[in-house]
Length: 207
Image 1 (cartoon, one colour):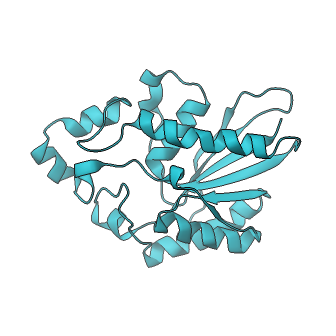
Image 2 (cartoon, rainbow, N blue to C red):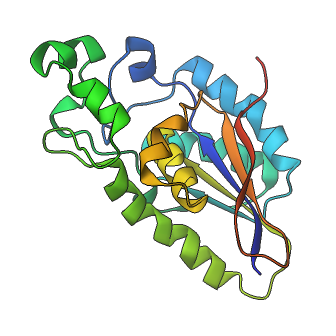
């Protein structure tokens, strides 16, 4: 057994969140409120005594992770595989814009993990690129028996990765809901069993 707990923290509020625009791989930035969210959540993450802190390489995640790292005294490692879903032609658009140009497509995307926006990735593809990050950490920490790892990432990636690590049937993935800014999911497992269980979802601190 290596990792005992895996915490998946979503970045703080961004300018695109405020505008209601799809971000995907666009490098949006934290608002002042988003930075305050990250400052507020950092001590709560610190109390989990993580041993490793890894972030998506998109700036909104890096800035959130840096503030968490300052509280936990951990360096931040970057991994591009933790990026949000690439949304192709939808990036930068509002849901209303997308619905007008691609009627019904938003509903299809939200209900079918195998469906991808034009020029973008499906939820299944996002999991295929991100799940090896967790597997590699397991290998890296071989021999440790009580390590907590924090991944700072994005709402869509977190929902997909949680679904996959819990071995949920693909058809049920849409039942794993959205994640608020600077809220987190926690997966845990017993020392004598490798299966992950859900210990918390959309957990956070109030501002």
